[in-house]
Image (tube, rainbow, N blue to C red; front, side, top):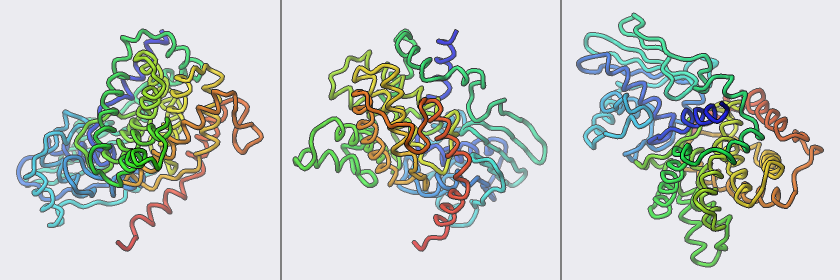
Length: 426
């Protein structure tokens, strides 16, 4: 049944994560490798793809006030719990942080750019007194495809469509029409993960509004609303709640969030704008859950073609999902939801990804504002015409064009951005 397929997709792509998923995936690989070696760690070597390095270089590590790929690899190796997957760093203690810092200072943990065509590739080698272990993660942040101990392969994981855990057949059933049909008819009891995403990500947003994290984008919006400089309207409320969640996450908050398609930041940007809109519109809990389910699934639909990592900002995709959810809350059906997609992709599609960092909260705020504007226009029957750029008559074809741009035309941009990031005078 299609309903079961869609529920399985949600179960695969909505995952509780602690910290930005790129450095956390590095910690996961290191923690897994550590389970195969005994004694003192003499060397930790990380090989990572450009996309991983870009997103792990400057983002805060959960439970610390620090950044760094070498640091998070050491922290994962000495204190990570690989059984907890993307919550691998949930149990770290202050003394673990000090030990990891010392390992970095002594040059025990080092990082290299991997020579690989894969956008998501992590290889961690841990050398101890008597043996070494290598763990490789590819395509998906928890997809361990190789475990090697002292030159012997002990496990080869992976799956037929490793970019996403569900089968290609599952993904082929994702269309805008089928998603809307599912959202309108699914039993609310089957959307428990969606409800959990609302609870976790809203809580992260409220935490960011309350405390001084990162650039304080969300907190600043809220404060200016209170001063009367900004209006207390739907856009300001949505921008504040979404950006605040990103502020907290990018600064190393220890609060878990529900990730979408391997990204906690995208999970926040999928969820919180819709939550904020529901609060302003006085929507019922059922309307909210169905709207957020729509937002998640539209995002997953686009990401299944777009890929987990790109030279384009993934929040443009999650913002498109959020715009659909807001359109749904405004009473829109399939026609209006497709119009929202056209409006969003015709607006924010050129936003580049220059890695995970505090500035991501500003991009979340920008895409959230666009999501609300796109939804309001779509609800009025207004949509960007196919005479505009890469926009097609059909929203599905527009999605295909957008994903082609992200996959085929941005590899040189990615290389250039990484070069700039690695050679800055700071």
